[in-house]
Length: 381
Image 1 (cartoon, helix red, strand yellow):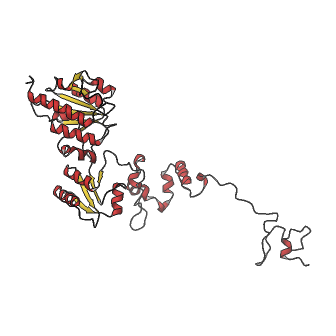
Image 2: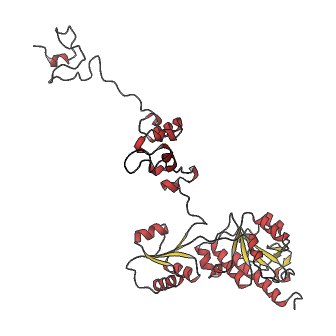
C-alpha cells in the first residue's frame, strides 16, 4: 500500500517519508485533512469560564472598569458611544457632527443623583406613597369621590361603555368641577389602576396639601375656643375621613395626624369624609407628642380618650375651654408616650360585652359631648 495523506493521519509509528509534513501538522495542499486531534499538537480546551468582571463586554466588566478609571474617564473613552440614557453626555456633539469644545461638552452633561436614578433611566423610581397621586377605580367609588369634592386631576373612561347612570353622573360632576375627561383603553386603565377592578372608569386625585400643626390654632376666629382632634395610630384612611366628618360637624378647627404609622388623606379618606376634607384642614406632625406639648404651651388642654380613664366624657369640665381631643386606634388605644402627655384621660362608658369603639365612632361621641357643653355655656346651664 502506498502512503498518502490518509496514512499520515493513521497514527502509525516509523520514519516519515522525505519531504512529508511533520506528524500532527495539517497536511499541505488544498485537499488535505486534519489529524483529528490525535497528533502531537492535539486540540486544547479553553479552560474554565472566567469571572464576569473579566469577560470583555460583560456589564460586570464595564462596572469594574468604571471603578478603576473613576467612572467618568471610562465613559469618555467610549467616544461617540456616550450613553445619553445615563445622563452622562447627551448632546456632546454638535449638529454638524463635529466634537464640541471641552467646556461646552462639560456643561451639556447633567449628572444623575445616585439616590434618584429612576429620573433619567426610569428604573428605581420611588413608588407611589401617601404623597403621590391616588387613583380611584370603579364606578361607585368614582362617583362618591367626585361628590365629596376630591381634588381630581382627570377622569378616565373606557370607550364604548354600556349606558349607566353612574358613568353619566361621573362625567357630569367632572365637567362641573373642571376636571378633564379623557378616553383610555382597557389596557391603559389596567395600567393606571394597577390591575384593580375599574369597570371602565378611573379617577386620578392629586396629593393632599397638609397644614402645619401651628396653622390650626392660628386660623381660629378671635374669641373662639380652639378645638382640635389628634389621631394616634389610626391607620385606616376611612377612619380618618369619618373623624374629619365628625370634626367638621361639631365645630372643630382641624385634625392632626402623625407623619409615621398613620393613615394619610387618600381617596378612601375623601370618600368617607363626605366632602369635609374640602374645608377642614388636616395637619401632619413629625412628632405627635411634641406637637401636643406645643399646644399645651399655647394654652390648650390635651384630653385623651382611654378606656381606663378616671373621668366620664359627660363629666368633662374642660370642654368649654381650648381643647385638643386625642383619639387612639381601635384595640390598642393611645400609645404610652401620648397618654403620659395628656392632661386628662376620659372614657366613654360602653357595655361590658364591647371591648372598644371604632376610632370614628369614639371621636364622634366625644366631639358631640364637647359641642353640647359649649352650647350650654361655661355654667353648664
